[in-house]
Length: 179
Image 1 (tube, helix red, strand yellow):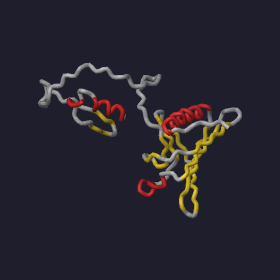
Image 2: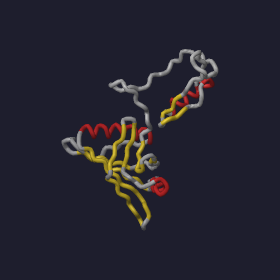
Image 3: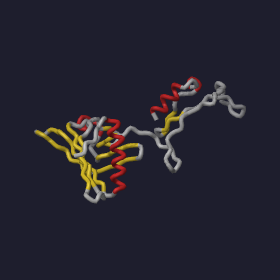
Image 4: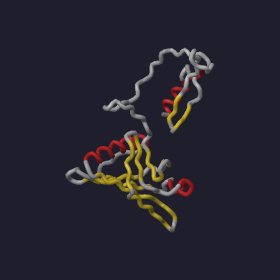
């Protein structure tokens, strides 16, 4: 959405548009125009036919909004610390587990002001993967780290998780090392 927003404001017709209006987090622009059937008197707007790159669509024809993959412990607050991730998979490939270890996560800095840790959320353009298996590590009474586990019970869960990890690793410079 930010990319679309910046492209729209950089457009040669942007000076004919009002400021973006937001309702429920959806941004829209309204053109100012004069209509014979309206009492509203604005500036006439003659827009050239614009060529816009098509948005990405899935097989069902719905538009997919591109979202930066992120991890959250408190909904709405992105974790800034990049974790160490370990994967295990059963021999038959039907289930597996991802173990995320965060050293000095940023959630400890903001949890007092924002709220309590409610779970482990992995968010990307496909939706949210979540787990409640989250444990904090304390050293000398002070928070030092978090370990979160995400269990995949089916090959479909495994594939979905791997798509998230591919996006997350691309965005955060992680590299997969098979041992």
